[in-house]
Length: 394
Ligand SMILES: *[C@@H]1O[C@H](CO)[C@@H](O)[C@H](O)[C@H]1NC(C)=O
Ligand SMILES: *[C@@H]1O[C@H](CO)[C@@H](O)[C@H](O)[C@H]1NC(C)=O
Image 1 (cartoon, protein in one colour):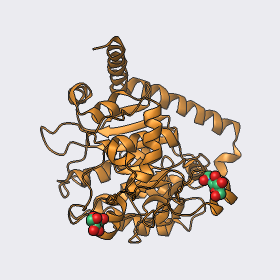
Image 2 (cartoon, helix red, strand yellow):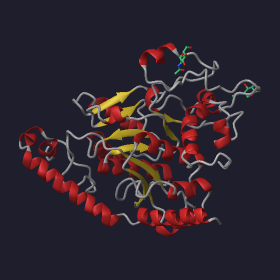
Image 3 (cartoon, helix red, strand yellow):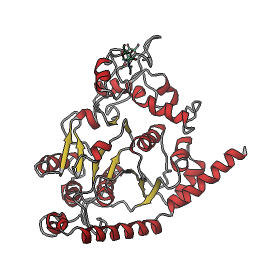
Image 4 (cartoon, helix red, strand yellow):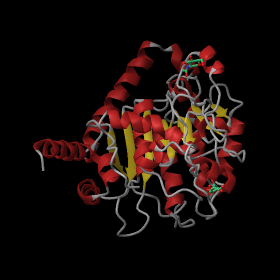
């Protein structure tokens, strides 16, 4: 092993230990946030008159389980650049694992959101996390150890075992994740991402848009709960936390998108509360075959790859140039101009033809829309030494 690798591994385990040992530093952060809020309230007393701090005690209760930060939510704050992922243990004895696609989720968020923290909320214990960081798959090790110190933080959570005390059991890991994500975003605020979401560009203008929550439709018209943005204590997530336990029936949608959709639509009436984006923005494709195939399947034939000169997803920010350079390289190319986050749904009913999984070579071949979307991220990763061009594991 070269000294270079050895020192990288040393840095890696130091940063991992730092990542796991976060409670003391969180206390410091919360205390300073509290002091800053006090200072703000003191300096600007008119702020109190219109602030939700006052009305929240009567009409909109804070999220239960003492999950809002000390001082409560602030109505004028932007949505913070904090990223949230949830990785819960699917079964006893399971190992913590991140695929290349999950690595790309974390890395693309790191590049485009420039987050101060990427929380991975997890119920894997410290020993299991340490084992994954040392002996896990290449991409598992990358997620856990390759980011700058302090950015990726493993946050220990206890996933709820039942929807409410004495209520229906939350048997599926996906259902437990539905509950954990809402509680954590209600608490910290930020951007929640399922592990199959690619961040395609900076959402800075959405974080500053003046809305406490920004959500997006899916192709079926529902509001997507696999990718959403909210300020700490935003009413949308606070009400999800409050009402999910009663809405839970044991099936997939009732407590998740079937609750989130009418809730977002209802709250959109309140100035600055919820902005609902169209399906292009967060979830341009879906889980039905036609859509998932169009995203993942590789075009066959020698000259089917999309070149870098002629393509619809040029990266120019000049509006005139953008409009004038919109010709597709191939007729199957999707235009992701309106897409901040690509929630890359899998095909629900079975395997995708002409597709054998997402790895580095798949992206570099530029023969599918997912590959074209991920390509700039992978090229950046190769340039920055975060991605090894020869690594072909999934
Ligand atoms: C897979 O490739 C075959 C052969 O080129 C083609 O006929 C078929 O349409 C492709 N299927 C998809 C979903 O791309
Ligand atoms: C846009 O098209 C013009 C003319 O074809 C070309 O000169 C220019 O390089 C293109 N710009 C981009 C960003 O692709």
